[in-house]
Length: 261
Image 1: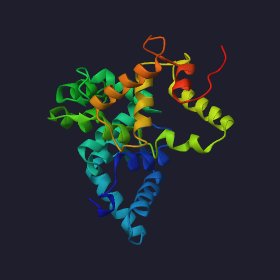
Image 2 (image 1 turned 90 degrees about the vertical axis):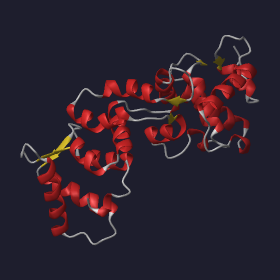
Image 3 (image 1 turned 90 degrees about the horizontal axis):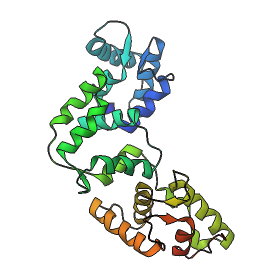
Image 4 (image 1 turned 120 degrees about the vertical axis):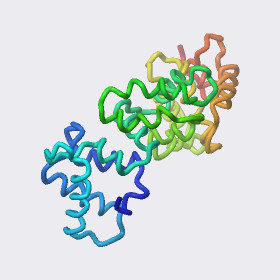
């Protein structure tokens, strides 16, 4: 394997691949292959990129993985050779179940963390992977993970799957803003987590809000810690005890003047 790929992860790989696989059909061919390998080397290698080096790399990959000799390179073929097993899982997950925010992630996490331990056990991981095994390529990439032992913690997996460059909350500086600015920022925040557009945060929406809020002051929190903090927030803010946090309830919790009914 070319040393240029040693530090490539699933996110970086997918960004490069999508640049060339514009129609998202899962393969690239023809002159796109030359452009693809040249771009890979340019992005990842400090060495001078020559046409000879590009063609050598292309021939190495194509001779090993273009088993049908059709001149196409499939994403699964390349990923299996370049990426470690855990990165293959993240790559498949991001292609098959793209997520937009922490709320979407928590919906999936709560679904598969059946015992609410804050970890995905080996058994739970198999259940999580099964829906992704619908193509031969995905089977090749994910089958080794079906034999994984141990647990997967939600926090690092959360960051890797979402590939967020920063916490959504970091863009807001409410203490340094005017009352009008704080009101505008509050509405943006509430609307971001109220993905169901019901006017109240509930279930994974509360989870996502708590997770992002707490990670402003702590790099990571575990599943059990998230559950404890979620219960504390509901205990403090859920005035009518309906298990949800209404817009006005959260405004009061944050020291904001609630909207008039």
